[in-house]
Image 1 (cartoon, rainbow, N blue to C red):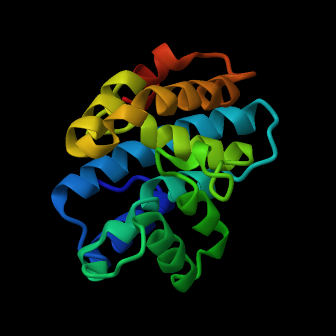
Image 2 (cartoon, one colour):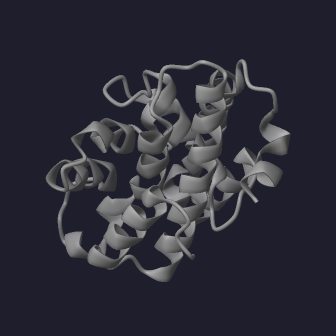
Image 3 (spheres, rainbow, N blue to C red):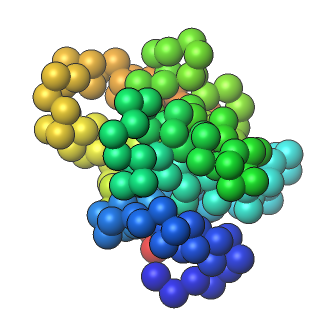
Length: 181
């Protein structure tokens, strides 16, 4: 990825410092681009959110999966929040903490506002490319078969968040991949 913005430059700097493996870089870049498209569209529609912050949170939502945290028993979303806080990006910590697929079912993690919903949703649509909710959740079920029985509920929750994320936007979920590029 050739950085074209300050947000991308900052993300790449942290990818390097946190020793992101290639698969994590690719996934995080797609999630960051999705979050950016959605945040900028909402800002253009008058929403009170900081598109640069939401975009950067999308890029860095999985920083807790860094090899630097190998052996730490905490969940990656909690580690992401800690790392972002330690990097002077405390305003992004909750956006990263509330992104896991199971977050809507956990009252302590449910995405509460538009920025948190955008990062959550961007992660549901971003694999190493933009994918459908069904494809992403099927992939997660393959990687984590012990949780496969929870996928239908997670898909329903993701659909609810999807409706909130696209409310008031001039495009829908089916147009996201072409807007992300």
